[in-house]
Image (cartoon, rainbow, N blue to C red; front, top):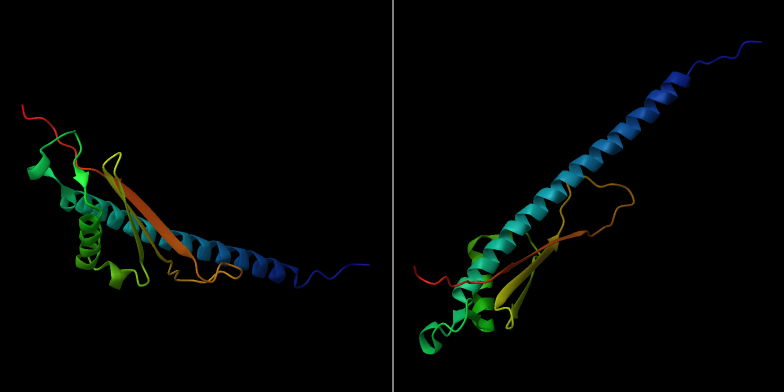
Length: 146
């Protein structure tokens, strides 16, 4: 007796096509997540540098007592938020969350950003509200004149 193998190739093609489709969805979403994280990294870097620069205090009153400038927390916070508004971060990343920390020992500023991740395609079983985050630390270093 011979077995009828008609329809087996169709099933195989459908299986491979679904695997290929899932792989494409994963690559597209991974690329979108990477690009959004890179954008947040750039924002965090700029905000930390801007905050460290404009938040520096005590230069004129106390002189330079070390190789890094001290930071005023309120001035740093205001500078970071101003930088983010001027760069259009709230429009580009709706729901962005900002955290600013001033380290008085190291005289540095750390900015942490997180925002909801907007993926172009939805993968079944993936988290419903994924987040992406970035952080950056900066300090203003004084170099002696030559």
